[in-house]
Length: 278
Ligand SMILES: NC(=O)c1ccc[n+]([C@@H]2O[C@H](COP(=O)([O-])OP(=O)(O)OC[C@H]3O[C@@H](n4cnc5c(N)ncnc54)[C@H](O)[C@@H]3O)[C@@H](O)[C@H]2O)c1
Figure 1 (cartoon, protein in one colour):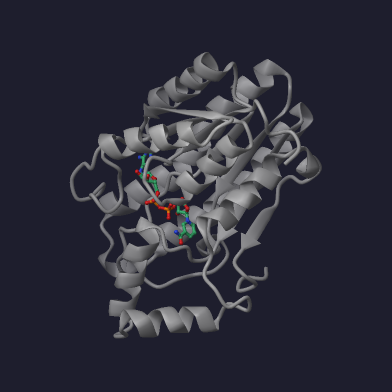
Figure 2: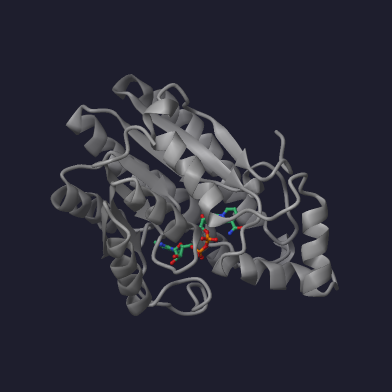
């Protein structure tokens, strides 16, 4: 992919094995880029449980694995994307490790605090909006400032979702946050464009990551279906006849960060096997 070798890339929420973030980081390292992973380093209470957040050992193992997959390299920093000073520190760590920030990928997300609107706790709503939307804003703010200071352009890629285009039951906070990410992307594209920084959103449908697998269990139970029935129903709606893979999302991110996507900005690309078409 043209233009990725040697680039400094910051990816939030990429500390879990088999997550979309791992797939994206792997692709960039294989392209010769240098990747800083910014993620929580341990589960914390009910809102950041084991099925949502990596252990420090998991993040360390991922960095070691990525460093074996060069020509690029990887490092990690502990970061809660809701905390502005931690986001600023993650940007600074990327600059000091890799000489700048050329690409930001806002991948951190909470997609497991599901409930009907009438039963949703404000505290859960705040966590989902805080990570998915406020975290995207904070990282774009600080990485964007750095890109402007560098004066060599840049790329900001926000991982939204099919939930950024359509509604899903029990996902009021998630769907609102992911629609918000697309709105934020459109404004950021206008503001950052004059600095040759493109800003785009990527909208995957279903990928069976750790989060994806938790959602499969949740929604199959909600619909009174077996897991197999639920997965079959999902596949029947996807014209290409298979679920997405982390590599599908990674390839889209690599393209958007490459020289070939220099004139694409303010878009929200579906990566959904043809399921989502608007
Ligand atoms: N898997 C899917 O089917 C799917 C579909 C559409 C969109 N997405 C989006 O893709 C992204 C990655 O999802 P995934 O499936 O790989 O899930 P995942 O659970 O493996 O990854 C989410 C990551 O976000 C991190 N995170 C949570 N709160 C954080 C915080 N406060 N600060 C920093 N990091 C935090 C978690 O620790 C985790 O590593 C998410 O934004 C998700 O909403 C996933």
